[in-house]
Image (cartoon, rainbow, N blue to C red; front, side, top):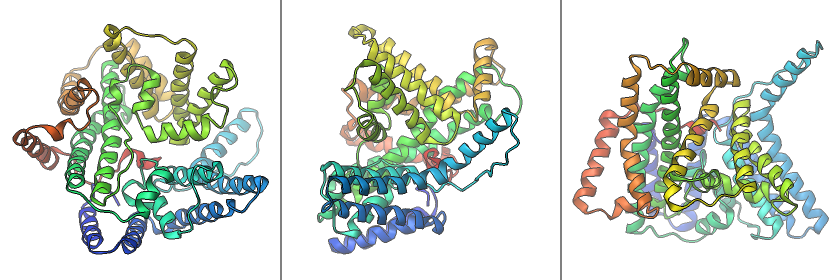
Length: 463
C-alpha cells in the first residue's frame, strides 16, 4: 500500500479511529494486524518472509540469554545467516549468477549457469537490517531480549516506517511500543505539519522532477550535455524530496500514534564535506553501517591503512545494499574513497570558505547520483562524455531548467532558512499563524492542482 494511494487515507482513518478507542495491549495488536495488511497489499505471499525473519530473531534473542559465550556466537550466526540468506536470494542471486555467466563466457567456457530472476519484496533491506540490529544488540548486551512476541513483531513491522525506514533500533522504538502511549496536541500538530510537507515534497516536487530525469535517463536518442547536467541536478533533488518526503510522512503518522521515529535527514545539501553528508543524509542507514559494519571490521583501531580500507569496504557494501547493480557499487566506492581521502588528509576550512565547500560537496553528491540513477556503467560513460564534450544546450533545455528552478524553489528556500537559523528544522512551525496558514494552503494547492498523479511509487521502495 502506498501513502499516496487513494486507499491509504481510508486505511489510516479506520486504524486511527479504532486505535484511539482501544487500551494499550489491544492497540499493539491492532497496529500489528494493520502493519501486516499494509505490507500484504502488494503481495500477501511476501508476508512469509517478514514472519520468518521475525520468528527467527525473536527466538534467537531469547536463546542468547542462557547460552554461554560459544553458544551466543552460534545463535547470532544462525540469525545473521538466515537474514542474509533471504536478502541474498531475493536481492542479489540474479545479479551474481548473471555476472558469473558473463565471466565464464569471457573465459571461453560454455558452462550453463541458471539465472535466478526473483521478484524483490518491498522494503526487504529495511526490515531485515532493523531485525538484525536487535539480535546483534542482544549479543552485545546493549538490550535485553523481549519475551513478548507481539511487541517484537510490531517492532519489525510497524507500518509507517516498514518499507523505507528510518531503520529503527530496538532500544529506541521498542520501549515506546511497550509503554502506554498518549497522543499530545503537540504531536498532532507536528505530525500534521510533517505529513503535509512530506506529501508536498513527494507529489509536487519529486514526481514532477521525474519528468525531467526520465527525459535523459530513459531517452532513446542523444541529448545535450547541458540537459544531462540539468537531469543530474533534477535527480539529486528528486531522490531527496522523494525519500525525505516518505520519511516526513512516516514520522508524522507515527506522531499521530504517539510514537517518535528517528530523524533521517538533516539538510544534507548544506553539508560541507563528504563526511558531513553522511551525518545528514539517510542518517539511520549511515549509523547502522557505522555501528554494525565499520566497527565490526575494526573501525579505526588498527592503523591508518586498515581504517581507510574499512571506510571503503563499508561504503561499497552500503552501495550494494541499495541494489544488485554495478552502478550502486561504484556509487558506494565514490563516497568511500572520498571519506578515506578526507580522513587521510584532514583540512580545516576557514568560515569564509564554507559556502564554496558546500557548493563543491553538493556537486560531488550530484555527480554521485548520476552514477546511482544510471541503468549501467555504459550509460554513466555516455552521459559524462556528453556533459564534458558536447555541452551546447538544445532549444528545449531552457524550459527544463526553468521547470527545475520552479520545482525546487520552495524546498530550497525553506531549507536555506532552516540552515541559516542553525539547522532549525521546526522553523515553519514557529511562523506567525497567518503566514503559516497561507503556506499550508499553498502546499495543498500545489499537491492537489499541480502535483503529479497519485500512485507513483517512492524511489526507495525498490531497495
